[in-house]
Length: 373
Length: 196
Image (cartoon, rainbow over all chains, first blue to last red; front, side, top):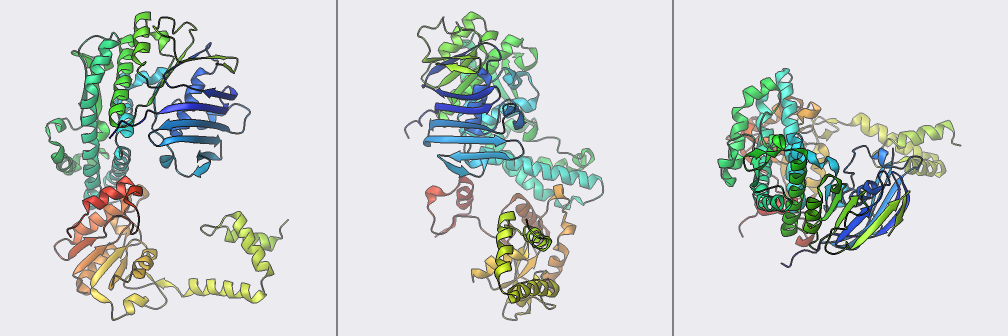
């Protein structure tokens, strides 16, 4: 099969998103630099682009706060090219009335059938993907796997649903409200779907590890970059892929008495973690702020390579990363993303791209809620 | 504005599934113009149905006598029993004309989150029927949802070894294009493939 076409945002139109009354932006493929003073609305443009792709904000789960103060509803229109072709995507949101989605003018009912996993986002708090709790690292990894493999998102949400049912039953058994006789009926789907999730994560981490190490070195983070899946339960990595389901089923059955006492499922893929390090150093805990930032960027670039090979090259959105990097790393990063894919970089520094060998494909200046191309 | 009696009818109609406030109003205005016998006929039909219906004492589907029409039919194969979540699942199966056995309505599916345990479903009654009716095959036709599958699994484990247990297959809609099948359905169809 020929490689899938890259995801490219061609045109973004926003209305009543945060500080933006209205804004329209034509975007080329390649490197786009968005510059402007702090608070000018650069991040809100990034947020709007993410909304136009996946329908949810990377900054908040409370959608009402994205709507411009005093406005009734927000609206984002995104012309997006990608593997399914060129489509016009629209999302509207009004507090209390919910979300309205359209694809090429036709209403779409469910987010799942509208969502395009076309973006990788780096917000300043993306550092959570390195130094945050295990759930944050798991989430970052799962987002990549969801975009890379059809079916992963369904497997994961199915596993989580079965887990929630089993946990509810464990609570009821401990409270004397139910018998444990129907526990196996929830353990079977947990083992089946959990094995698929564990296998996909294992393969995903193996595929990301090489690119991560080379990006970490390229970005000045040193040699020996490594990623490892820390599975739950711990012995899982030694078990062959096709024996995982049985192993998980046995573990669940074996731990029933203890887990009834605890009223929750104590181990399984919902407790996996990702070890991120350089050499022997565990960057999650021992890394400096700068090392962790470099690792997070290397992880993001590795994810981009992975998606390019497995699905389609995503749009990279780097919000306010340059200010934290020294001039050398800054140039390394900007040169690294100049590989033909679309990358949007925001910066408060008007001279952010001065050190580049060739100028960016577009520079957008943001000032006082206005755009200057 | 609407009079109190119209408003009452509209708000009652709007509680029906699939009927919003606008449709409710349209139906109410329609009844207004229709001859009075129509309204009386409709009201009587609704009352008649709700007063006559009761659960079948054997399968718990709806009946107007001790037994539902299917349980009362001696031509149905008593050795074949099909477990469904709700009575509404019986009609589509009947329309296939592929099934000549009897049914058993469980009254839902397992869901500990909602406090539904095996004891809340008519599972004990089902197990009792297996012996009483001389059942040889139990067809589990719960919905292909997580809850439906868990219920099927629980039932199958419970009666395994006593009767043959089968599950409805998941697969492709007849007459449809493979190209348009979703991955989940197609994946299930592959897993459930059979020899030709």
